[in-house]
Image (tube, rainbow, N blue to C red):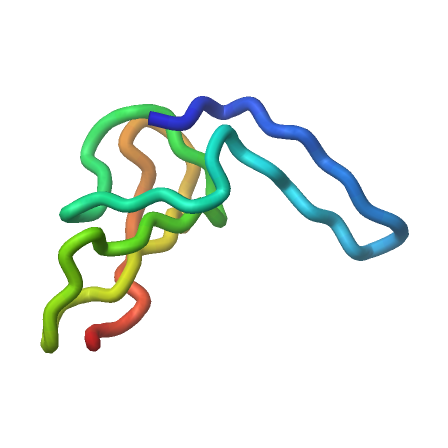
Length: 71
């Protein structure tokens, strides 16, 4: 699982945050580990009617995850 550390780069109001891995694939929203608001996990087994991905909306242990809509 990714850690809370990241690097920042950018100019002015444009800021890019890079975490340990840019693209993460899981079968479900994470339930453990340290996560940061804005991290995204893609569904590794997408099917019609199921979430295509999840976004962390609150940092911390296990984070708070919201699905980004179903296929």
